[in-house]
Length: 507
Picture 1 (tube, helix red, strand yellow):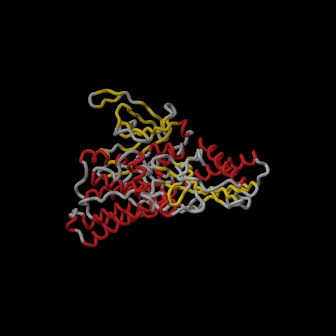
Picture 2 (tube, helix red, strand yellow):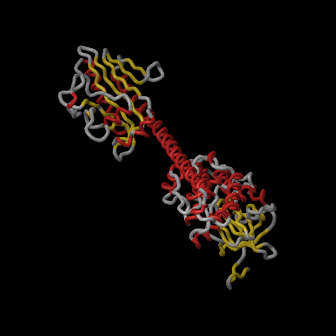
Picture 3 (cartoon, helix red, strand yellow):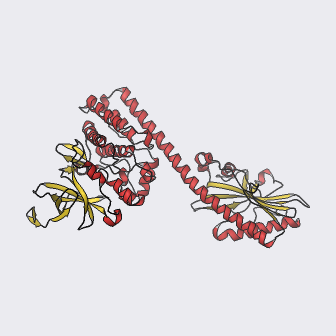
């Protein structure tokens, strides 16, 4: 039995690696976290402790040992919360970590105070956290946040070392992502990459913003947070000393390898406190410090811009792989249909000496050829277009006799207006103001040409007919349309349309 605040509670015994403990799950200490909940506990002599029950159970973790907690148990640290015991309680099937009971968390202070007015006070807090990270260099925390920074014996100390790694090893990256705190998660965590010491330092930079403004640098929905952490530079901190601002900007660089090391971070914070321990106001800072802050912010903005570009390239490369597989399917459907219905036709496919798909029926040919991807166009020019291009190809029917004629169109894997990405067929024609080409409709040979042709206003090149979807439920329409053109070319009946733009029920 246990009496707290005039009420009597029943204590539950748990048996861990070192000894037995009593836990009172009716008395939580702080809010429930992503990896577990902390409750009031006691040892056999009545000494008060904090006991964390992990959300992961024996079945999930396959009865793994909490090696990280055993690694920390019995060691003395200046800025890491003491760990007394840990393990799997056989009766409940739950994992527990027993720690020293702290007075309060940094999260509670931020919630109560809003933010810290003195830059030097914030720097002292950040320094103690950085020193805690340096005391256990062999462990990456992975979930550093104000709730895991606790006030104990007159110092700020880091708690929950190693829990995130245990969950990652015992379950899956998806489970880990669901447990992490999005406001403090580093870009590499959003990309499901392995965490490193730089991951914790990014979180330290986020904590710095929370100390100085009351909020981490980025807020919003999970999807908004992902985009901001990956691509957006944090807002400037008005009224914050340039030296401290520079340190936070360095910690929040998108590329992990561009962030300072633990040791350098500790040194930078120590030097700032030594030089500006009285929290000298920004007006009293040196011109050099101000220039340094401007340069650090510029580097952070450039880093965010580069990270945004990298993320966009990766996204487009994923879409390009989808586009390529889809085009392969469509092209094979076209050639297979010709092969089945006209066995006398000859076929060429990529990898057999051809750079695309080609069917020859007598003197007539039908071909589909992929275009090289000009990645710089999407970054520099796509804002001018109603289309967001990923990949392109050309489709052409060539008639050799009695009159030579080429009927062509472009195939674009693109998002048109607000629609989803898919393959579109677009035939082009010269503007009537410039006169007509001898071969229309025709294909364009690059995404750059398409951006120019399909930009706002009346250009020199226009669409010869309304763009037609060619994949999924429209694939058979595309196949039959171009087989019809191939048959016309075989018969020598392919000719310039009588009128443009073309209406496809009157080819």
